[in-house]
Length: 272
Image 1 (cartoon, rainbow, N blue to C red):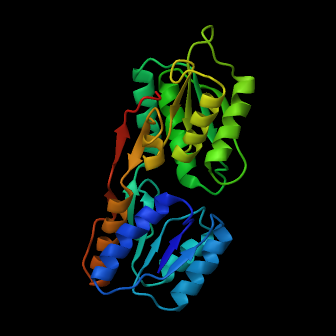
Image 2 (tube, one colour; image 1 turned 120 degrees about the horizontal axis):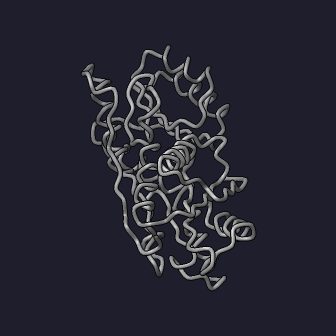
Image 3 (cartoon, rainbow, N blue to C red; image 1 turned 180 degrees about the vertical axis):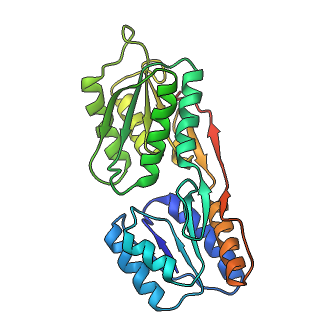
């Protein structure tokens, strides 16, 4: 059984590809449920899928309810949580430190001399990984005695148009230009950052002279921009493959590390 928050987001499609490859090679078939970032829908899916007595369950949590956690802990089947290794897992977790990724981006940008920061994100009330990255970013900035000059949280799931509109809103209250110095905008993910790039192009802003942009995920669209996006790449296919390997080992009664960190990679693009 597999429960993911979205399939319209290519991040989870990549993870699922790696997972399916490993499971189907071993003769197992994944049955998929999509929660749409709704914790109560996630709870219903987990209950329904467990009632079919699957060999194991893979979950990319939204903001899981206490009942979801209870169901998983009491299920008696191997459970592999994916995407974030920082929260304590019920059984096994495979992913990366989302908080560490936020800190890493802050360290890189501070090292490049930026001191004026802003953040643009989507609704993170049901997106704990985006929230963790933001907390890591703010922690690292605070250690350098730097704070966010502005924050825009756009309602709804992340998208390119949402990012474009959010940056337009941000710049109304946080102007850029020679007198203020460059503003670096950190985005919740690459989709939002690509939208920010489109707004900068349409407004005639110099990137990165007036406004610098930094994303997360390392999506192909970000690297295909006229100026490749500075971002952090998550190893999504590998994450799915290793989650599949961990689940298969647990099904066979083997022990596996409780936490498997696949890490991440900074992509130094041209936008920051």
